[in-house]
Image (cartoon, helix red, strand yellow):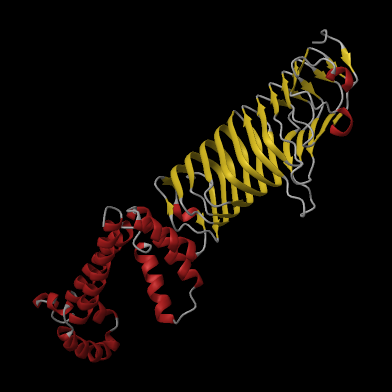
Length: 445
């Protein structure tokens, strides 16, 4: 062990401190820019352990399979930290990189292929910096991270263009951005216990067959989930709250379980997404009419909820499906009229107040017609047209009693206005049917 407060500017002097194949450096200033496997490697050393050390310059580690040692940094401070591993297949670094309670003025960046764990715990990263796991732009090279574990670290995290066997991000109070893009998950992805995350963006992500995915206890302002292909063993959303916006596009939710997934107050955009084989156990959609999606998506959500016994929410998606169908409909006038009347009368069975109010309004209008007929209002107002009214009313009134089954409601009180009463009874029947359907859809079916 070197004496405290000593400046170390040569990697050879660090290697010379090895005891039992372990180097333990405590409380020193490290004035070294780089560790390079080509010049600084000592194959006899199995662990480098730095505690309470200050790395005075931006520090870069260049490693490959020739290095068997683990690198452990505890309570150390860095300007910037970068670790790059050899890209050559079967020559990747197989040790462990561990940073715990470290302080960083610049970003942490990992690049290359790592056969063992990258472990970050309670790292203190300045506000403008981030933790970055990025692959090379050259598509012929495949960056592989066997196991990435990040605990209790309040920093933006980016993972780009790489394959990851297992990824765990857990117990952070606040993360500005968490972005996973152009990544393949081989075995497991877990994001757990994030008290606050301004943006979680996951795009162009491939989950391989049999992998496991868990999102649990997350409070997200914005959640962007796009271009996800998967054949997972399971994907679970447990206690996930999205407050501002939820964008879901080109996602397959096979074997996916939604348990306490709350997007009530968020703006919701869903496009080209499959919910078949998803289990919508507990999703708080909020106002379903605020969901932005196409007719096919609403139809699928209606079907999935109906098949799982969530009939009430399925009915709301049915109404949205019909509304979209009406907006995109290009058929004839009569079919368009039927759709329009259904929307006006009960919003496709979603409003029981509308038909109830219309029943009262129609009842009042019929009362006026009865009063007008008994007092001959129409004949008094337009006396010159009385022969025309008589010529039209007489044949219509004679036809009305033969129009079963509604005509059976016509009684002696309808004499002289049989056809008008028949029209009112037809309207009443339609409105009562809409009222019954709407009440049923708001209770149980």
